[in-house]
Length: 421
Ligand SMILES: C[S@@+](CC[C@H](N)C(=O)[O-])C[C@H]1O[C@@H](n2cnc3c(N)ncnc32)[C@H](O)[C@@H]1O
Image (tube, rainbow, N blue to C red; front, side, top):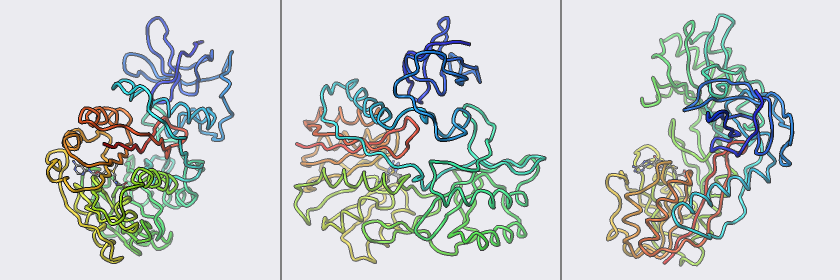
């Protein structure tokens, strides 16, 4: 079917209308006329894939460097130049802010992570009659695409795929599936098998031997994404260097997707806090493992780190105590029990880095506070813009936004913003 693309959608597909039916065409860019093949129903319309560009190729189109582009569900923007991706993502933030009434916010140049920098990825595996298939899902499909190479991932992750695939042949039942979450830590690879039935003793032995053979730092498993993750073999505790300290990553714990992205977010937070007096008391809300709390404490700030989960907070506390950094930890659900404006009194600055849903309740309390500076980190421009509007209603000025891209070749974008009053 021949269609002309109007614009890019939020998932990086080229959007077109055919007789009023929306088409989401992977691999097509605005202005192009493409020959497209329908792949699956999607919402009110259809997902489709580009066969060929027939006319008016977009000037920002480049030749994809990945042979799986167009089929693999991992990336949707391999055909768009880095410059155009940066413009697209910056514009995505700008439009989200405009919808909330922010007309002209100074935007810093986007910081994009390089290829081969993703240190965590989630893969799918299925045992078939022809053996185990391990890779990413095909776009808009439950089919798993076998992965041999990937320009997105750290080389250590790619290198571990074939031996892991072979070992799963002894673990998975016929037709069985499992997700593999792999992280490259300072101590080596940390692998979690998610969606595995409780391993038998011989299977545990097989997996422990595999951990030895691949020199994994840790191999763990969980029944499903919401169940606790149990270590099968912990040969070295996986750690990340945060603020010059080794923070031990709990199984399944959150970490920024690339070291370069983490550095860019931290640089943005430090820039936002420039001028805040050294040794001043600050809060790090949604602190996780201490990506910001530990380096900021190493900078001299007296940090109170607040986080909902016990495991990362314990790891953060341990790392801070080992390095004798000034960090106090508090476990608290900040959505149900946000820190009240009165509790924030006396803080010289707040760092806040909520999950995708944002931090509505906490932002309402911040809006009522007297804290002079807020460094807001976000992985979702829409929830960020909603929370920014709450802060603006409370009298905060949005000074600038620093876009950060840890997910090149996808439409995903993150940011740091500075608010002051
Ligand atoms: C985007 S991560 C940021 C973590 C950390 N700042 C970092 O950069 O590594 C969001 C963090 O918020 C925590 N979290 C999610 N919901 C929460 C809640 N309702 N209350 C407190 N913490 C929460 C998660 O456990 C996670 O550690």
